[in-house]
Length: 311
Image (cartoon, rainbow, N blue to C red; front, side):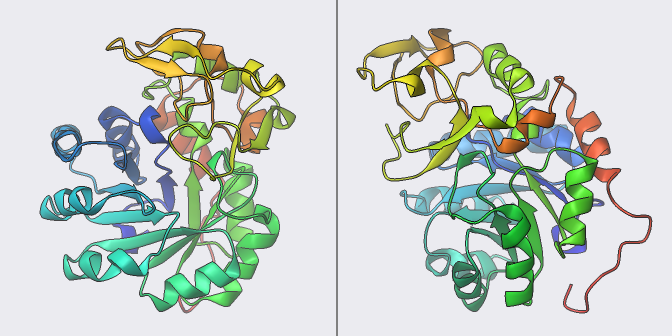
């Protein structure tokens, strides 16, 4: 995708703390765009991750920021490091666009409605992600991918990436048929060998059906008032006490209903933690490498895809 500097119109959604420099680099090496999740990093931690990605690949990659959190210092780190793509979510795109544009980076913004899409385009955003209700993790809108994507494509004159329920070549083909210029894929990359997701999380993704990925507001510890889609588990089965159910690799406590996912090195009742996943999870039946996932998605592209004049 020329505007992103990649061979393929595939973007790995930031997937929070499950992302790693190794995963981002592997996505880039496969011809797609990897995305670091920066919002809950320290500036020093983000700088280290950017450097780690660049040691592993010369491919372009991006940094994602959630705009409802304090991100000014993190954005400065990314721009000073000349990260070529900055993606933003859950907030006012206009508050950061001028800084991103002045640095020469491409600005991608995730939206959940045509109204939000038009507003973001008016702010100068370069690429929009139309995130359907099927998506895993925190979900901005209330409309399904099949309806939202063509509506956003028709509403704006910038490229649109489709997000929500896309895991394989069929999802890629469908997204392109709806008028999208590419795809934004999260859950499928959580379930890869390069992901930082704990084996408990990856196994749950492989075992789950679409009905197991439920929309909820329950995992609100750390990010209140933000609906999300996660796998059904013991914490969602009943309203339980917010007691400590697991520990981070450094020994720090994790309480039930925190917005923390199971990562390698964590211990405790990991099944009770938030395991974000979209409804496309029902088509994932094995843990694969990033290269295999990108290859599968790319197989959904026609040999000569039609393009619109504004693309």
